[in-house]
Length: 198
Image 1 (tube, rainbow, N blue to C red):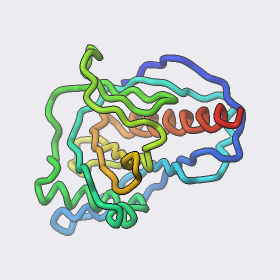
Image 2: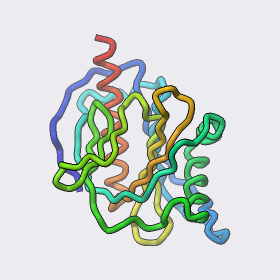
Image 3: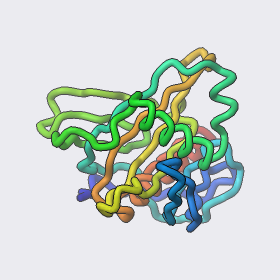
């Protein structure tokens, strides 16, 4: 599940990230079936204020790593702006066997903080992935469509030169856990923006 690490108080920022949760029917491209899911999406380019006075800015979650699509060109990054485009791209990659449908059984710790996202082994000695906050373009979660009640968490990052992007996919144990990860990341962006103004 998720363990609170520390709390931060931050003031409302005029430039903060936005998290939106929408219930919609998503075409999974799996034999023409459609699935109903809740899509929580964090758009880091938003300029709306969240209005939160108290927020969690660091938390740990147990997730499973599904896979990644790395080194996508800039023109593909532009095509993957909307949550539905990203979901459809991941579904197609799974059908083309570029990403597995089911992750390995090994659980990992996903740590979200004001510095970004870190994925490590359960003992946290081996860091598998680091995603600095300033390179995260979008994070979203959605039902995996396999009827297991699990949610996928997709993280779209750019490279430091902003010439391309990568998509990282993790499996969460529930929609609540996936949405919690998005909320903590949103609070982390708010915290970073607030400290940047100071």
